[in-house]
Amino acid sequence: MLQRRAFLRRAAAMAAVLGLDPVRLLRADSPVPLTNIAGGEGDRFREGHMLSTWNHGFTSNEEGWRQMQAGGSALDAVVEGTALVESDPTGTSVGLGGRPDRSGRVTLDACVMGPSGDAGGVCFLEDIEHPVKVARAVMENTPHVLLAGDGAREFALDQGFETRDLLTPDSKAAWEKWRQSAEYKPIINVENHDTIGMIAQDLEGNLAGACTTSGLAYKLRGRVGDSPIIGAGLFVDNEVGACTATGLGEAVMKTLGSFLVVELIRQGRDPQTACEEAVDRIMKKMSVKDLQVGYLAMDTQGRAGSSAIHPGFNYVRTRAGQSELIDAAHRS
Ligand code: ASP
View 1 (cartoon, rainbow, N blue to C red):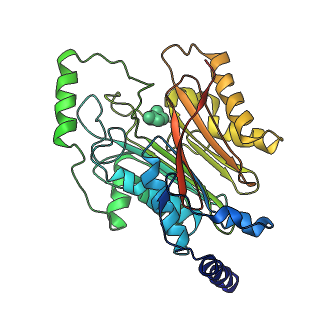
View 2 (cartoon, rainbow, N blue to C red; view 1 turned 135 degrees about the horizontal axis):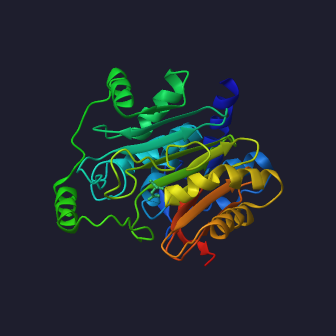
């Protein structure tokens, strides 16, 4: 704790010397001139490093940066960052406003993983706006990793979470329109995707990740995707790196994609190559004409990588409070 305080004091002092506001939140068009800080490992961590899937990542990463500048950990950054996106009613595949299952009910999946290797998740959760925060509570307040359905909901209520109707008027109208044909054909490679996977390295060099979604629009009732499954939608190893996934969860689950990416980094691949190999694994094993998957990874050295089956997957990378939207490389 003392060490942490000393570190934060040093970071604040350095910011003051450089004339920087340590809580300034900036995007790519207004860079923070932190790149002139040269030095060893400690200096690199001072940047804070965050990757979030899709362009809602600006919101999540900026909140993550704010958390880190206020002394928060990578875990605080990913949980609070993704929770903001869960609350946005315009996001159609996460939290409030997420598209319902075919019966018209919104069911949510989420998980978190921290630097100690601890993890928590919820799946098939209804009526709770912040599944990612419930996932954190599962990790911190129970001996379990994953709670499902009514049990997850009861746990959330016990923990003080309140219920909320997550089916917005827009979402209800879209579902009613879908019901007219009721064709069950999940659309995968949609741009403007909102499922959010976020991985981060904090100012002390620790890694954490979070992944949260309402899953596929009009899915079969009871369907759970990759997003709450540790090793599929998310995996973190503080000695190696972190990875999160988006796209068709079934393909990610069958190949345990995020775990695979982190294991490939452990074996010496850089994050980019590791993501490409994990995508290639899917492409080798299944027909990918109508199937999109994207991986996003970082290692402990601050390197990032991303790869998708098809074009259209993008993500936001933030370092030192400066964010940029990047189109992921694709393999098809
Ligand atoms: N992976 C999520 C799922 O299959 C969906 C997504 O990423 O949009 O539930």
